[in-house]
Length: 487
Image (cartoon, rainbow, N blue to C red):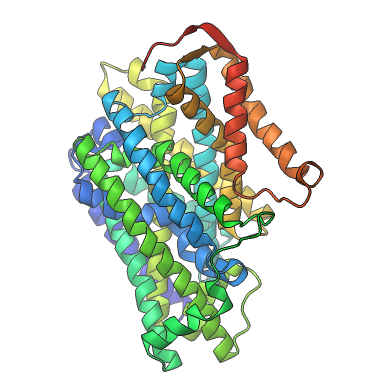
């Protein structure tokens, strides 16, 4: 498959996104940008959020990760279902009852402005780095296979993507993204399914036979029963559960789409449907990964050392033009879905939580719109900068780095919300930022000294729980005698 053909696919797909953006952003206002005027159909949100939840990390990194970790990631996915149940039953009703646009305003109501600023700041850091991780992965793949052939530097490729994303989300925001996500989800899923059928055809076996090959291979190993292993199944399950709680339920990016539904009943339908669909979809990606490795072994293909390149390397170089084209469309979908909603949520949080421009321009929607657009551009510049920094230090599968980083940045959010929801204790609000900063530092110290502290036990993704627990305990240390008002 030639770079010119890939570039042509990129231009056509991008044009399609701009058509959707033009249709959905007509007559859009600030409420459209922030919460889609609360008119998004729940089933459209649920379907579109599949692509947003998967992003480029699942699309590229999970199939490649199978070579090292087998199907152990599926245990994390199983934990997702439990996590979504918590979000649906506990957090969604809270956000709708308080009529929130930014979910971090709950912290203001429960603790005070210091906690509010802390929560929104940790989200901004988490989402900027998380979006940059995801964006880096897919852009790096396209750079490797396409743009480098035209002599275009990596930084220029990154700028092009962010400028395009900024343009089609600038006016419509969430109102546009709800619909572009459906397009992106469709192409991502079709890419995986069609690739599987092409591989089966190349190997001249039936689909039943390839299922048996995967099942009886080492790649299908799912449960690690060694408690000292970082991938011990119980740790994986709990990690998946709490990763979902924090990276969905406590994340403005993911919850902003849910808050665009017409009411709490539809939002719950959306979340429940999403949780059930994600299980077979993630299993499909793992199955694809095992199939890719089996195919490579049968064909004598020498795979790249970087596992994130396994899927694109085989699809583009060995499966024919059609397969390569389908992969590129899926990758482009992943690239855009990795950043469009993140950029919108970052703009929302920085505009409402940090700058409080909704209060400043309460009686001037046009001034709020202009200010919000400026913030949109600034957030794009920040993401570009972080991606370029990440490129210089990347040396591992992106999905592993993403979950590890989430353990540090989302831990304080987990502790804050747990303390607010399950206690009626009032705290010294001015000291909350100190606790929130110290918690990740202490968690990091515990992780790097785990050999000394725990012997052979290795800390994995449960770092998130440790971090949240430290924050919770820290809040107890700064409690006040009087009880907090019920929120």
